[in-house]
Length: 63
Image (cartoon, one colour):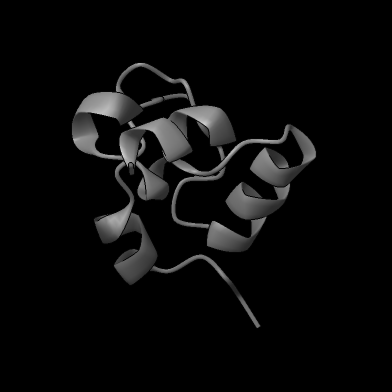
């Protein structure tokens, strides 16, 4: 089954333009899990623009 879809791409809030994983959620999640991070879609637009995708940042933003 193909993971990439226009629906995924339309709801992807990642602002990192050269990202090859946009719209391919399974690849994005795998990539960020390897780095102990979360994908952009877990963060507010303001936080996402900092590119700090750490779990620590996620927890701090959601207290």
